[in-house]
Each structure stands twice: as C-alpha cells, then as structure tokens.
Amino acid sequence: MSTTTPSRTAAADDSGDGTTAPAQAPPPAPDRTGVVSIWVIIGLAVLLLVTQGWGRWILSSEEFSPVTIMGPDEYPTWREVILRVTEALSIVEMSLLIYFTFIKSWRATGRFGLDAKITTGLLLGSFTDGILNTQEYLFAWNQHSINMGSWARFVPLNDPEHASRYAEALIWGIPQYTYYCITVAMVACAVIQRRRAINPALSNAKCYMTVFAGAFVFDFILENFLIRVEHSYAYAQTPASLTLWAGTHYQFPIYESVLVASLGVAFTALRLSAIDHPKGLSFPERGLHRLPARLQGPASWLSVIGFCFVCLLFIYHVPFQILGLIGDSNTLDVLPSYMLPNDL
Image (cartoon, rainbow, N blue to C red; front, side):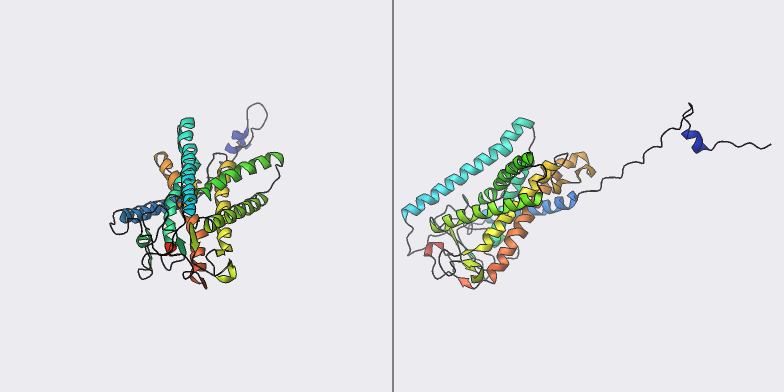
C-alpha cells in the first residue's frame, strides 16, 4: 500500500499543536519616493554659478564699486532718511532671521533645521536678481541706496550690448528675498497649523488660496510704499495692459504681486511638506535614505538650496523677464536721473 508524505509547505504550516501557523506577510516594497539626487545636482550647479558670478564681480575693480550718482535731479533728504530706515529694518529682519533659524536652532537641537537651509538657499538665490537687467533696463534702482554696482555682467547669457551699470541695493535688496519668501511662509504655516487645530478637515487648497491672497496684499502695499515714498526702485518697462498707472514714475505691473504671492505659496508648501512628513523631510529632501549616511547631511542642504533657486528663477524671474521684454510702457524719460544707469 502506498503512503503519502506531507508536502514541505504543509509541514511548514503545521505548528505542532493541531493548528496552522499564519502565513508570513510579504516583505514591504522598497521606498522609491523622492528625487533628492536631482535636487542635489541642481544645488551643486547653483553653488558653482553663484561662486563664479559673485567672485568675479567682487574681484572686478571696475564693477565692484558704488555707481556715480547722476544729476541733475536731487534726492530730497526726507526720502533718503526713509530709505536708510528701510535699510536698517532690513538688517534687523536678517539678524532676527539668522538668530532664530541658525543660532537658536543650533543651541536647542545641536543641528540646523529646514529654515536655516531655506534661508541659505534664498540668500544664494538672490543672485538671480542680476538677471533683471541683463537684456534691457527693466528694473530701475535708486543710486542713493548703499550699493557696490551690480553683478549683472557676470550672469550667464547677459547681453553685453544692453548690460548697464546700475545700483543694485545690497542692504535692502538681498534681504527682500527672505521676507517675501521664508518670512511669509513662517507666518503662513503658523496660521495654517492653528486653523488645522480648529478644523482638522481644512484642505491645503483653501490654505494656499488664503496665503496667496495675504501675500498679494502684503506685496502690493509694501512695494507701492517703497516706490512712491522713498523711490527705492521703479519698473522701467512693462506691458501697459497689465500695469497700473502706466507711463508714470509709479507704474506698477500687477503681475509683480501675482509672482511674489506665488513665491509665498511655494515656500509655504515647502515648509508644510516637512511639517506633514513623519520624518520631517521637505519634498526636495525625499529619498535621502537611499544615500550613504555620510552624504545625507550635505545632500539635504544642497537639495533645499537647489529647490529655492529653481523657485526664484522660474516662478519669478523668467516670467518677469518675458513680460518686461515685451513691455510697451517705458518710463526712462520720466524717471529721475538718480534712477537711471550710469551708461544709458
């Protein structure tokens, strides 16, 4: 008589007490989320671009010096006092931001958090300001601002025939990249978290719409104050159909506030992505676990820096440049002489 032997599978399922052992769960699928390597490559390219551009500018005896204040128009003392107050407030804002994002964070945790990386990315990203006037004089700067000329000639793809020597504002110009971006995002995230505590079902779409509206109003009021009261800068060429007070010294392209508000939303989304992530990673940092441990720290910094630069370039500067170059409302003939480039 033949006998049958239990299969190895059946034997494996037999627990020995008359019951069947539960089947083992399949291994979890590997986590393939994130494209951190791409952001790291962009971050490295940003460091090279900024280092060579600012380095060549600083070492240039002709370009790295204050521009000549052009006459015959005089800049009233009361306007200059307000301009100096704006520069002082910008220094205060940057000092507080550096304290809270770098010094306080390091003292509390022994490391730098996402806000320190964003702040660094924005300061490096302010290099994109040199793009504004590489093709034509679209953005007029006040020569009375503390300045050392401009690095526009050292930006790739600049047009040597139209490159102008103008007074890029150092004291308030560079910090504006922080208070229009990370400062807006910090306030927005605090408000969103409070609203989420009251209404857990609150959608991100509603939050971002509110951030956009608030950032739009903030930018519109602040910029028009700077333009009208202290003559910090002016929009030299814009499309008349998209511009308020077109053809005047105080013309204001409405898309300026749209673009700046969009930046506020982008950086709010960046911070929220880290707040909502179980490991506190923002979306450009996703995928760090696939890198060797010794590279994860530098990769985190580079990825955020790369993301910040891309946002500033493609959300603000490229659209601004395109719209400015096709603009038909040119105010160079009505602007005061102290807002014109030295070599116009």
